[in-house]
Image (cartoon, rainbow, N blue to C red; front, side):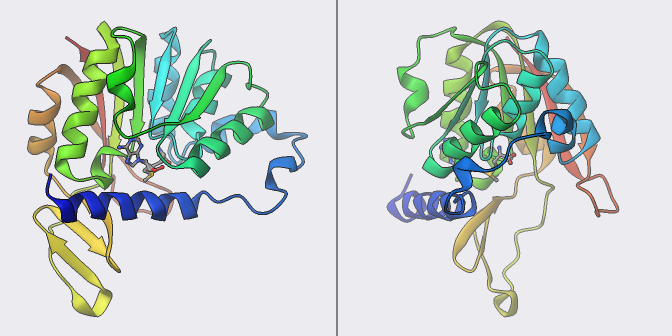
Length: 235
Ligand SMILES: C[S@@+](CC[C@H](N)C(=O)[O-])C[C@H]1O[C@@H](n2cnc3c(N)ncnc32)[C@H](O)[C@@H]1O
């Protein structure tokens, strides 16, 4: 990957780290009552359903966990061991906080990881993989290396759920501070979307995984179901 793309990726991680910054004292926030609401953490019903299907897994990896909502749902729904990892320190901290608030701290292990962490994990350590809106906010080379790493750490037959934003034609719009490089869309100079088509994602995924289904979902307030949800099996 060329230097400017590496820098673009690093700046986007700084962006996410700021997004997940906890307010001062946030780690001591009131937790009472939170346990009942874990299903509401999912941005959509279809994502909730897909994650709960992963509770069959014994060792689930939530890669690029952000606030860790996927990990918390999986653990609350019965997955006995979830590892929530993110290169952004504040993502990993949020995930730990959420896990505590929702009463599943004993099932969710959260960590800040270096970029090449997957290479250091014992092959076949996991049998489930959840990755929500990570592959499509990084340069293609980073996405490819995450997929290769996932294939390495998953046992054959493992289940994966990968969710992706919708496709947008990469088109610069200086008035809206949108710039474009290859398939990547930058807003205000920050890489926010690697906009690949369904077919392009499918080809990348099929190098290691069988595509069991591709369905579409929407976030609250969106009219059309255009976001992509891949269910896959490690070959
Ligand atoms: C759009 S957020 C999604 C967070 C969460 N999965 C969700 O669905 O809300 C993208 C996350 O990917 C993380 N990330 C970016 N590059 C990564 C990499 N190479 N390895 C692990 N995490 C990464 C960012 O730090 C950020 O937390």
